[in-house]
Image (cartoon, rainbow, N blue to C red; front, side, top):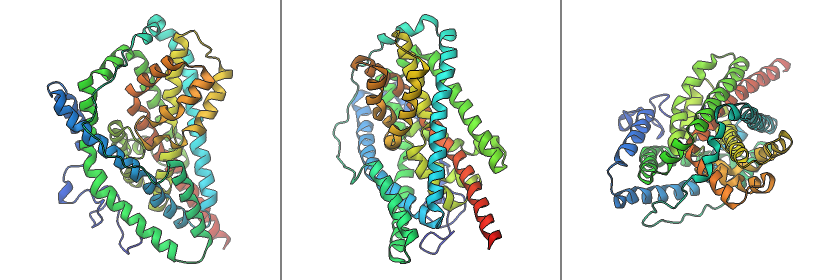
Length: 419
């Protein structure tokens, strides 16, 4: 596939070519997965003896990088999704609806899977331990020395709609000016990803785990909610297995091999806690699974914004635990409407770490009746496991890409046959 400048290249070291995202050249002898694992280990280790003033240096760096991600994410969405749509041709509109429909169905199905699993497991496995939820210390933590504000030019939702309009518009018109501009813009986004985001990711992940270890909040919360965390983690694994079993049966691929190929994206998301920040890695691993580049370039950025199966699973599980501990209504009649609305509300959530819970907190208050103290408790419990949901989100995006690639292939075959 040609990407606007007449050179064929791939993401994340799939081939040793000259594109800036080539991760196998001399500058990137070590793969991204080992770097992420080392960053996590060092972050936890250094948190044991780093003084607060040193930790705050890395918190400052992470604050600046997070603001940069907030600035670049809307541009990344436009730069990847719009060309992906018009490169798919006139069938892009239909394929867009199919992708969005599959993503939403996967999201709400995950929510109901979480609800029924919690309804069965919590009373049996947790017993009276849920009464300790109200004892969490949610005091403030370390702050950056300073930050540099980088307001995005538009929201994630606006960028998503803009990408749809441009992509479908370029498909409809005959002119090449906008098409060439968007292809060049996509190349710029690739350069930013390859030369800025990818190299800084390990440092960013190191800072995240350094801060969590230094503040001691996460370890305390995870120790108190160990049973809940284990249940949610097992649900995430089962969810991914089910997703890839379905995708593998449709695409006629080994589901477990495809799931294993997505492991670098899973581990990267554990550190970044952001679906959008993990897009480069998710995209590269999806292409390694045999998905065509034009399909992967369309599906992965799109699903990073609209596919939240892992996040909704965790939100439902956390909300159910708090509701149950407080003696509140946990009936299906209440949670069914909550899950259906939550799938729509969190469309813009993956832009920042922890974005899903922040986007849904209003719905949690209005539909589930959580007061401010319960909302704070919900946020504390969710953030302690934020990376689990994000990792499940991005890994599941690879399953959807397999399905869409198969649909696109069959559609193209039928068109050729009719002609």
